[in-house]
Amino acid sequence: MFDPRVGFSYQLTHDGKTVLRGGYGIFHDRWAQYTSSTRNNYPINQNISIYNTSLSNPGQGTRRIFPGNFTSENSPWRVPSLQKWSLDLQRQLPGDLVLQAGYVASKGSHLIRTIDQNQPVANVAIAGGSVSPNALRPYLGLAGITSYQTTANSVYHSLQASGVRRFTAGFSVQASYTWSKLIDDAASPFDIYSSYRTLRGLSSFDRRHMFVASYI
Image 1: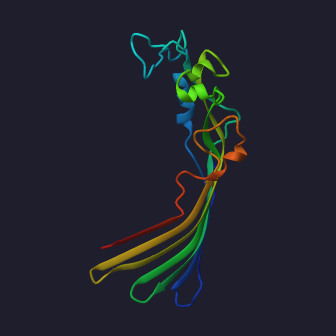
Image 2: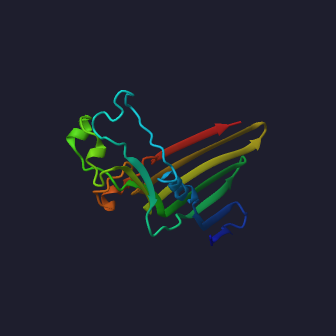
Image 3: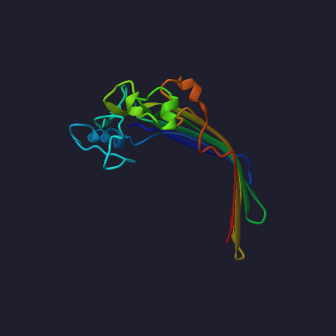
């Protein structure tokens, strides 16, 4: 896989204390662990796991057989990638203090999302627990059909600033602040009856403000 990366550093002042830096790169994710999950499909795996039931009536009266789960990978399968770029300004101040501020961003493409191809339509009886979801699935006789797709996307933008006082006279301190926003359309749980466009929103791990400080 070809992953180009480029960067630059430019000295803005003659005293060498102000520097402009930037960079861009493409990275690819590891995905083999998802395709290897199909080894759990029948007939390779002929075992069925049953949860939350009793030995006297394992089926709980809803099905005479226990449907199995299947895993698949949707075509076309593209390798997930991430583009990252940044531009920052660094200035050295008196007292061994260095300040830095910059713009850092990334764009994820062909990210992996998980969907259930055999998702039952929303039903009050299922929500109440009186009917098994397996009795109302589109493909009866099967339980969940977990399908991996490389159709998700993400975008991240941030302003990152930091200040560092180098270790001098037995003391060092540093602090950093990030103001960011992360958006994706890989929401979980995924509703197969909805458009991908309706899933786009703030990521579950989005952190708008983050401040970290430490000293020695």
